[in-house]
Image (cartoon, rainbow, N blue to C red; front, side, top):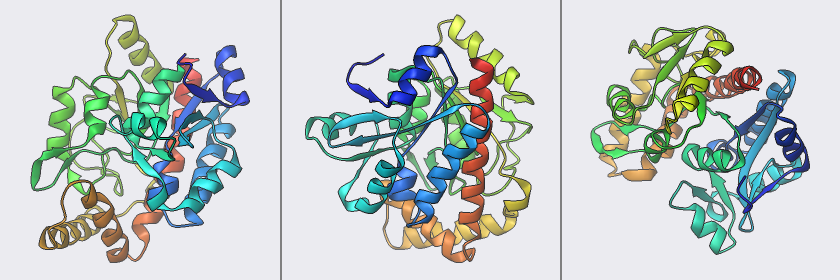
Length: 301
């Protein structure tokens, strides 16, 4: 375990006992949703993990200290700081926020890194980053991290505002197996299916655990992606989601928005164009993924 991390007493005890632990990111608290939906969603994910017999470990950097397992007061504090006072932390950002004693919210990539340092094997999130539509050179650090950090990431696929076929190609290049949880196709974040095939369908947490255990036994240092469709009751029809995404992407291109500014702009526009239904689907996916992640962590433990 990396000594530069500060584990909460609860997480430390669970790790020493070999109990199941699920890592959670913190960018959804600072950059993902407005208050109070951000806090409510973070706490709902933690509650879902506890209900399944595992322990949540939300990860963030507070005053330069990398923390694994936040208290509710710390989650509330991060939510109150706002985007301008908390840096989004991927691999490149972690030494900056630690060295300069800043606040940082971990992205998918950043959370994977810290979770691996702490010895946590499973991480649950909403949607991972990918290749941006119309900009194939713009590849999320999440995909690269999945290729070099052996964490099991439970998600609803890549954010469907991205180029999903190209995202799958990059994952293939990085050697990352994409498992469809009770699904033969890759979920499309807001919608249950993109129509794109996954590498392997799995139907139980034990099947995921068997694949992850084999990866580790073989000494392979890549991550494993477990793609879980959003619950049917909260999913958006593919046509509706795609129409909103296409319009939001068109507006981003027209405004000359590129790089890391694209995702928040497009997500906000999709929220507006769907009358808030995209956020309902997003939150449902996050909580469901936390629940599935806990089951996988139990199977691994």
